Image (cartoon, rainbow, N blue to C red; front, side):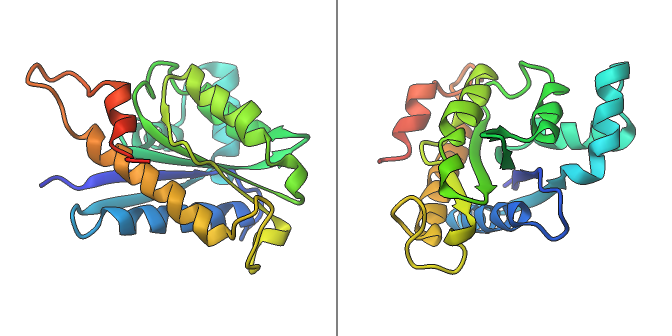
Length: 204
């Protein structure tokens, strides 16, 4: 059986960064939900390493080989985890620019889990008023639970959203895994499973 491809996109600027740490936790939790039932092929894309390529693509309209390969990895994945730091109550410019250079139809029907990091819990609503609408516009299938991690959430029993970070990560990862499993099913005509049926697979 072909391995499921899971790609995480991290827009963290530091090295290491809390954004990458959250992306790694979500990726590992999703992998655990899918294995051993299915083999999972994991890839993490660090946008900081592609910043110049993304800027050049915005100006010229042509991706570099490295950026083109990253775009193909995202568009060819069975599921995507997208995590950004929050600046001025929204996603980072680097994060938005990367998804701007991807064809606007390439993520249609793609299971996506969104996450974000920030200094305080005040920015958590950016997941709902910025990230979720962006992926809805791209017609991706966004997991119901979005995960925000403020500085206070790391290493505490109760975080900014009333639950500890580990609980939110586990629930969100389970939802993405459910969407990825169901997304592999097709009708006899080879058509994608309807959006409503994918959500039903979550059994929430």
